[in-house]
Image (cartoon, rainbow, N blue to C red; front, side, top):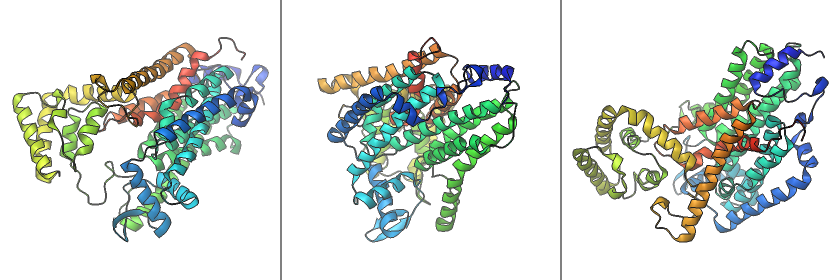
Length: 503
């Protein structure tokens, strides 16, 4: 097939790379190799690094396995689904109430685990998650190879992913993160493959090719899995859609508009179809069309203290306050001394805030009356300092979720910055903090060094969109940025990209 060389040059500028996927004379390069070939050709590197990654994850499994309240919540859904055929929660002994408070992705995974390995076998779930996490490392390596066009970058990405303790520790936790990260990496890899498949037919043949749509089908199904695990997985669909939209609007793009439109429709259809089925289930069972899950993961007709949540957003900026204040209300006693000084601007506000917490501690519940008082206080604080509420605090949340030492599943004190913890845990906190900062700095430096990087817009837009979304949440948690780590690691691998065209 004849190629439009001028069009390819224009596409290279937009994608950020000298047309990965084709070589001199229009011949296919190694960039189109599948993951299996990538591993086979680099087995001497991949095998020891993967074994080291396995050892790291087994260490966390043996020393720091983690089952949280969320884990038991998911397990209850899975057991009722498996044993009673009802996707619901146990309300009383022998009574199960259907729910839509959580999406069915992770409970479905636990259904498989419990059916094969026994009820409440969280260890088996964690072992499977370790295998999934190792597969994520291979996917990240393949994504780096395709985007950076470098086998050395792929090896570096594999090492950074396999030896990353932040990913490894969540493989030993009965939570959604490991599966979510895997499907995020899979969706990005399929998206890049799909974009490479579009290139050979640019401005030459805009007719339908099933081969072109296969990676977009895979991308859409992977995004669907992300959303079924966590509602915020839909941000990946938005990022991919934005990128395809910009590609479509760019006049110099040599790809035929029909190809881009077909790709976008295919991804959206495959990603949203399972949510439609979930919505139909909710409409049929609970008489409410809920396509995702409630923002605060509440049951139907369950009271949501919106005033309290808004008040929290007027001062919260870090994970410490999430654990000490936000998670404790309602239900547990709250120590007013744990409130940061930014929670009140005047002596009068301080007195009213302490009175509110005292009233709460007497009942340990957020009644509508108490919530209305929190709402009034929140409104006063927002009106007095709108810049702080809409800009400064969200920016601080983003910084905390990205830069905080990721030891929330480990023994160190969450107030590590007070430097009064046991020396070994303090050293772990500082070490993890430095390592996390190194990943972030390496990603920025790798992107700057290797520019232009093909299709980097998908990775960067996902990081930005997810960070902006997380800034709106009243409970900043470092784990919420882990889904961005496949993109972070790929960009960081740009530091290892060869300056020459050969590997």
